[in-house]
Length: 557
Image (cartoon, rainbow, N blue to C red; front, side, top):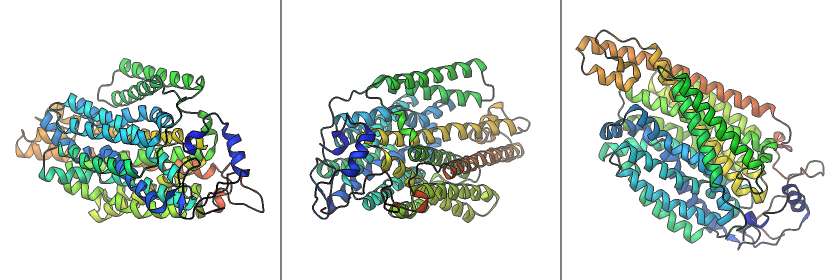
């Protein structure tokens, strides 16, 4: 049984103290592995990374693939505005609700088993979504996809921790892992756009199936096993409580930013959200084996890592959503052209994420988090200012935004996973994934709703235009087809100006959120154990241990 599962009853502080003084089991050069597992050869551990990265890439792509496909599938399925909202949000909402429970379940049954089961569920759900015949079936398929994704995501990071013990290699592996999350989210729109050029809308889901099969076979062969700890219960009720809180929050945001919000509906949604979250926290504090141990957040490194991951995804998802829509609806890009443009973020993230993973042990995670968030804010501002500039300026801004987000997410992953007690590995991985999903969910909900609200409140309809044209850019373009040429041109122009007003507001808010998060990380210096000086965790200063366990190297001791 792996070291992630062995110590279910140990006190984490006791464990850290013991690790700092207990001799390590000798290992063969070129191999690594957690205590209690067979050493993992160098070639095999990089194959493990490839297997889990493939799954993570699929999960991330499905977060954003509908940004370019939504107009087409909405037309084919005749989805209403409300149904479009839930088609997008069902995936991150259900995933965020289940992730904490999935991490603990992985600690119980074994992370390899969880990953394989998640892949099977994800592949089956992809078939359901691809062949949906109405919006309700597609929403159900998206929710089913989230169940498989929630099973996989914590397992990917836990398998990396089990497989990679050498800190330098683990830093590189986490860099690749974080980059896959960023790249998947960034290339989702281009995947959707490219498929729609040649196939029907269901192809954006069907393409998952062959990749699932490859990842399933590879992971089954090379991933290290482990039976988990059978005395760790799975708390399904707690996951339901979280989802009640999330659904209430999202509904309240959408209702509050609607043209004619209902105070009663907003109040009821907020009450439901508050009750859901309150009951979850209360339940966790009384559990012997909670889904989340809130004492983890007493470690400032984990707290800053969670905040950085969530806020980076908040800005990324929001900017990507509104920019993809602007490119298509205002500038007239095809889905493929819009997706190709937005993919510049992936080009910025890929090399930076891997490089940051290799440099973390020298530079430190906190400085890298701060630098990444600041760089992301600069990129967001460049994208904003490029609205009236040639397209290369937008691409340049997206490259900078991608580079900053890739750096911040990689460093945040290292801060969370590298500082959690070994027996809380699954829980820490789940906390990190939840921060990603909550960031994406709230980014789409808040910035997308704000975008729609600004549009509705600032658009000026010409004579003869229906009131429905004020509901959004899609509706305005549809209404323009039924007007005479002069009024149609006036409506399209007015709608474009209103859309750009919303674009301005949402990107300003995204930049402010990134700057505020960078400031929080910069001034939150306590407890970083020399990170600010660029020393690796566990490195000695003036002959004194930093408080972290010594780094395990892939050689005999």
